[in-house]
Image (cartoon, rainbow, N blue to C red; front, side):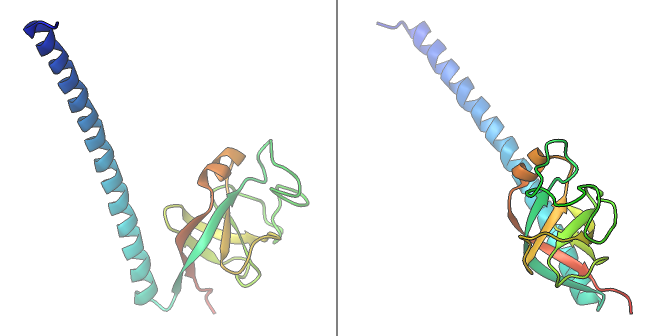
Length: 159
């Protein structure tokens, strides 16, 4: 049978564990709220750009990443031809080069929600009219990113 002292000690330990878990949960909730606020601000800015100017168009698209210049890149999967050169003849720049379907002209500047500004300079056999593939540095990053539905802002070319 447990003494009162032992019972109080066990109860105290359980309470400490519960408090620690609640504190960790609270920190995670705060972090997710901050991320949601940031995403909401990005969406509002994208909508503002779209409505405030004839220069921008927005669209929700399926976004993926590819890593043609990664040391472990797979020919035929991550790239075809020279992995350092895009279909437009430009050099692949991870974090700046985007691949899109033929409906989006080379040189089009795009802003991808949460990812930043890119320039469409590449194509891909599996890239449809509602898809964007962003160049990145590693296959691990591309796989971790997966496939996401994101807001894409297109800067219309100047006539």
